[in-house]
Image 1: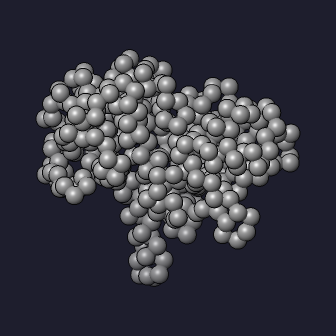
Image 2 (image 1 turned 30 degrees about the horizontal axis):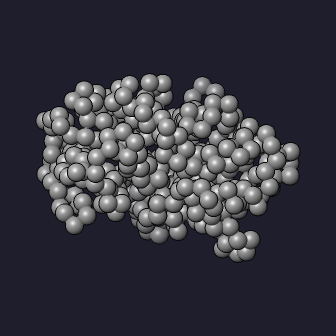
Length: 340
């Protein structure tokens, strides 16, 4: 016996990826409903070899459905997630709305699977920010061995993190560079993204950090350990899909780079590609479509007593969003609902 699954926001990039991953991983689905806003009503989406038509989320009755994967943004989630939860359907939400609610678990299954039992508080589970998700997968096994004191991370985040409009803007501006009669001014991003990098993701806060940087700090503490100090600089780069991160880690105890490499090789969800030769690392383009978080460039940091540097790359539409949500659904099914 399988599950009755809802995917809300099924016509968006993350919603479509959720459907792909559910099919690829053979999630035990008895019935699936795909929801969208009224303007997308009837749009066809694929689930494996099946074509489904979207239903209007406004009119949908969540009663009798087991799990709903939400990819509809915070404003819409504020309306529909409580409705689904009240009907007995467990919501796994990809927006930022519930990530900082202490009563709602924020989960990366490789890091804090035990938190899944807290779903009962409100029948809702939060999915972390894309940049946080891939980083904590690497941090947790190292923290278990040597306890992390401080993390300094610089991110290089693809335009797909801003949705379809971000992808379109990079594509249109790139074409315009080679067409002197064409001009595509910034709209989704603060400045032109083609052949450029933008050191701002989300809005600025009073202390000069951006909301994206703040998210990485708070979410890492919630998922891994509240005692870890984190500072982040988040940058948008002209890459279509795949986030990259340069991570500097300071530990309480010494951790040799070779041992760190071995620990990460054995850790769930991680693939270590780390050869000290030209091209012996993974770039964002190479990680697209893969489930793994790739780690490269592992090396000691001689400027602190117990420091390491590493390079972390992942498909942000997968581990940073859709894959992590499906993994939470798998965990929920395995540990709590126990169907299929």
